[in-house]
Image 1 (cartoon, rainbow, N blue to C red):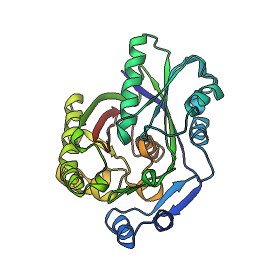
Image 2: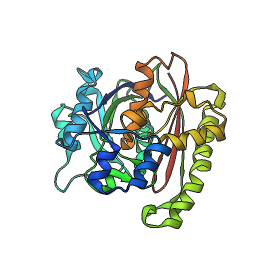
Image 3: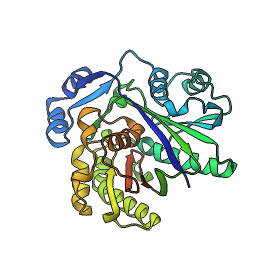
Length: 310
């Protein structure tokens, strides 16, 4: 059974208010009021002087469990929202593999599911390791991206992006953070640029909550659990308002949703799942044996949920 062996998080030291970001990329006062007052955004972590390689490197260096186990890593995956992140022929993932001596690892990117790509990467890594049949083998999943364009900095009416990064070691079996189920729902009718198509945006906003709830329920069914069995819900950090509304629909206590990082980190693309897991474990919110659920949505549109046991 796929397990998360260890998780590391890198938070760039620079914090920018959403007003400072807005001034730089041309957000209107109305948009900023929406982000702050309704969506509950405040600050985002950014590293304007660093590259994508710097960002991923920092997360891997924060993972002491990798030291001495580099030879066991068979797969290196980058869970990425943006299909193209650097100009050809640069390849920061291959540079990362060489820098950390992951000579036995196949390196590739998982994309096309936007901010839900990290859950796909965990599921794919687990299946690859299971097929290999080596119980000592590992996979390393990294996540985190640069906000190098205006489109990569803001999703209109929804969120402002940040630049935190994560690294997660995956094993084909283990006693903690075991993956019990994974569910995904894809809505390709929302592929495109909703920000430039008001009708598409309205339809997406209308379908967002019911599709997310359907996906969460599918993951619970796959794990053979009820929502009441879930000790903690780890969301993607898109905003606070959407999760408060989803909790009302589900009848789930919003106090058991890790929302603090929406304010202090921002929405870090596909890295949110591991950032929130790190917050939950270091803060003592999860006890051994607890069941928890990670949920994410990516524009395009992909909805994903994963149930794990701590």
